Image (cartoon, rainbow, N blue to C red; front, side, top):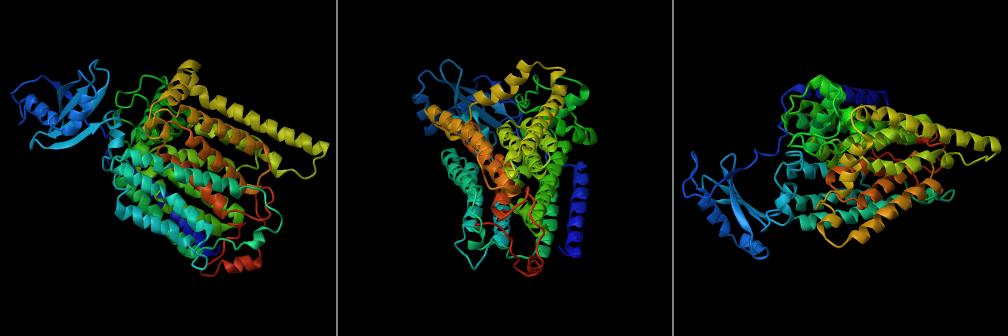
Length: 581
């Protein structure tokens, strides 16, 4: 990379950090839920300050064909009227025993017009109603989303090879947008099934990418190429960093996930129990590992927390820093594999990919998972660092636990040559160091939780809750009678994690990234609750595996680029040297 490009990247990081500091300014409110509905007895007299009476609201709702149909399926069902501020009525229909809400209607008090009517799973799950801006405000608006899709694809399009498999890979990564579009329009029975074909494709693609290849196979396939030079990509990184941070500060909301992180951080600082007794507006916010809440402690200390679901600047700051760390780690990983060109391309890909912006502007903790896994891949050559980061990732959200066998046996794949007794002892020693670092880090991370909570409480609030929660955002939760298939998928994910930890695969950083991505995707295929915020868990690993494959890696570090390769990077369409696409 030329000195000018390096200076641009340094300036980009400084700009991003300065913008992160500005997050203390007022941001968009995170509270998405309105005040709790207030029950109103049946009456023909409107409550003070209202135009409609309870009887009028009930009559309006009773006239709706959708609600008449659902009531006919529940003999003995009944309705109740509620005031739902500001200026709305809510009519809820309940089953005969009162245990299930089977229908809900929202009516404008000023006009008497029906604003919403819901039945089925969308009664209990307001998240499934497609409310505009519920996640990330305008991050998924078409005037932002579609340009980002174009910017994401543009550097990797090779017009000389229009049918390149890499083009298909990138389109599949963007195809989650189709599912999201249906979700945003409350078509849950279309959005959920449409998320699974790209997940399955990417799983298969990662398994193909990480398979061992014969010597010389890479030379038979043209390498992927960049259609935009690295200096221009570096400028794109600067622009996208500023755009994303500015959008987060001025037009984003904090969902319950980020709110939970700040609550947990305050509890740790105050020396209170980390699990149990969360506020009524986030009762299950204590479902994550202690590492997640500990990651929010610096931000809660710097930006404070008033105890309510307000602007939550601490959650904004945490999300921005997680995002910046992901960019930095991708640059470092790319530089290690094929030099600064690939590092810049990977950093750009994260910033241009619309689903990472969706996560950032929802101010969730999901980018933290990507950061910890990327760090484990970056420091894979160090058993203690790899073990510590594996523990941190596993104790943030539960899915990365599946990566522990793969990370534990990484040295066995990277050091196969010369299996002498001395070499075998060294391998066993490195494995033991990994396990020790894993256990010690896990013990240290769990101290704030174990000081006040029993293991049973922690288990019930995290693992048991996640295992038993119902959710319509997966095939298993949306459709009944698929329990056996789901168990088979979950067992297959466990088997895959063990097999990839034991069998020979493509060596190097890119091979490890591809294997991690395959395991994470396999785990996501079997979970009860899946959402678009989980895509950044595997997206950077997929990009590194697709763009960073090398023909002859040595311990995960590619050889220094040749003079010819360095010259080629000065061209307008430099090649990213890699294995077969």
